[in-house]
Image (cartoon, rainbow, N blue to C red; front, top):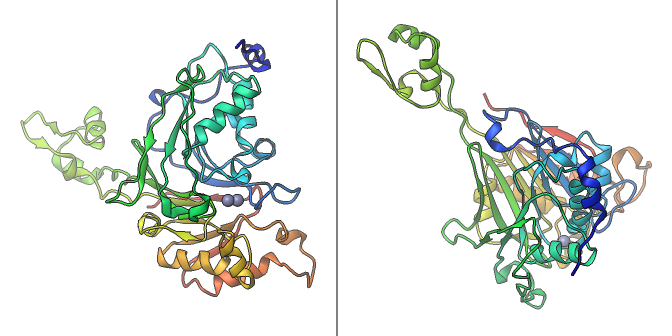
Amino acid sequence: MVKYSATSLLTCFHTASRVQPPSKRHGWKMSMDVTFLGTGAAYPSPTRGASAVVLRCEGECWLFDCGEGTQTQLMKSQLKAGRITKIFITHLHGDHIFGLPGLLCTISLQSSCTVSRQPIEIFGPVGLRDFIWRTMELSHTELVFPYVVHELVPTADQCPTEALKELAQVHPADGPPKEGRGRTILLDPEEDSYLLVDDEQFVVKAFRLFHRIPAFGFSVMEKKRPGKLNAQKLKDLGVPPGPAYGKLKNGISIVLENGVTISPQEVLKKPVSGRKICILGDCSGVVGDGGVKLCFEADLLIHEATLDDAQMDKAKEHGHSTPWMAATFAKLCHAKRLVLTHFSQRYKPAALAKEGEADSIVELKRQAESVSDRQEVTLAEDFMVISVPMKK
Ligand SMILES: [Zn+2]
Ligand SMILES: [Zn+2]
């Protein structure tokens, strides 16, 4: 089949992506914040976009879910689509993925076809690779940037039996030219989790959720940051300032002129704990104990609360949660801050709520607070930014 697309014609006129390949990046990413691009359930409305959250670490953006309209939400925010390096999809319901084909096309338009870049890594349940491939194929779109789709294999107990479909691997042998070979990631039964990323600074794992179709939660765990050099100790030991400091800081022992070996442990202060951000997809509960383990003492726990507590039966029937359910999980995990999101569109943002109106979003906050002991409870709104400072 002959393929043509506006993207391939236009892309050469655009400037190169601003994403630096990892080899050029160095050091610990200090600033970290979370931006809510969509906080509504089921469909996007003028007051609440469909699900999308961005975790930004010093300019690099990781997108979690991509509901319809995510790219226009991105344009209204301070974030840039070209900075997205990883995409995590919690489950395959439309309000979490219908924005993905369009966003990928726009990233393609903004990419250069001559400058090489690291592939965008996309993680999500089995079926995601096929969804991307089919939408691109049927719309005759050829993405010019490299990407790779890693699929998580759910277990049968993540959804009602009748909803569990055998997802055939119908991906063509000669996949799209820019798609790299992705991994098929199985549950690690010992850990009850899926290992997605393990780099210099972060480990990202997924855990199982119960929903109408299999859904996942993601835990982004920053590794311990090496401690600072103890200047006084260095002086006392006679280590001359200069390259030796750098070596010790990087965990390498040095030998002084007098033959004495100095190990990093002697001169480094205690390592500093990393930050933990957990983002759950739609769910009426977790499956197994992976969720509680991975969300333990999370600095930020982002949990859905589609309906208020008075409608708990209805929420559960549809595989969703209420503030009480979200706060009970947050309490169990000793999370430090709970952010509720994925609200039914009936709950307008607090600023637009009218006095005495039914379906008050503020009531959802009160319901969560009645359960939590030390957790701060926040109601997510579109374009809300929460920074997660480094630990000292
Ligand atoms: Zn949803
Ligand atoms: Zn859903």
